[in-house]
Image (cartoon, rainbow, N blue to C red; front, side, top):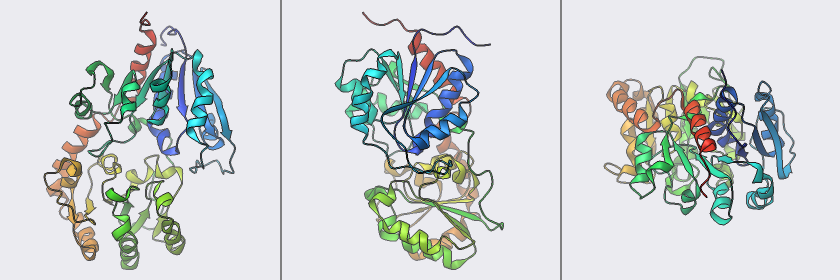
Length: 376
């Protein structure tokens, strides 16, 4: 049974990279399934439009709208990450169109420039995209959101410790766990060799790529006993174009699956089907640990990580300090996993909160904001 329609309209901003979609779209589905509130989905490219049009067909209250500066790009319908229009000019041109909205929902901080810089009737709700100890929590734009949805009470507490108002942060559980439109339900390989997922971070000071990445990949490929999914953060290739060269070099091998811009990189497919996680500080490991499995972490920079909360995730698996030890660590990973399983489950639970029902709770919070009386 649906509830009476709250007053006003909800606008969702799908203006950024495709990696944001699985963190935001489950809330759209939950809101459309439980309320008759009108919902506008503002999209920046034809890639976003194609995906969202396909998924929202069952929901008559949802309308797809092209943001000013909308870009039509060559696409195959699978959701490959497109080149985006400049976001700040798009946001400024979008301002008049958001006047009819009571609530605007976004998954990234750039959109929060609007309520920070302009007087707006609409209340902005920001939902998290990714979690982890290195998340940037001190950006002043965060204070422009009327409400921020975070996955866990632990994540919420990190903001309260910084002086944010408690009533402006709500722990919903991990919204992306409710995303159902995954590309791969099984590993993309013909055989059953163990699958290693290597996901180096895109920021150089947090990443294993610049010091070790290519050598790590070549060692795994040459060893031949593992299927390798090499799927770094979408933005890595912007900083390190040699990533694309390496992918062309190895991508045709039967035990290698490379992805640089596919939707499977961001929809939970690879963290769902891999047997071993190999990485550095990417928050993808937390998503991987929704179902505890072996992890190996690469300390390419030689940091003194023990006791450093920025590297709390590294307690969930063996940490490799020498690139020559990578294969041996992968070989040990399944054998020593019992030593880490309890730590992994506790870490994931505290980081992600509930892994079911997050989207429904987020939708309920949006309705609560809609129904709140405006302050006069």
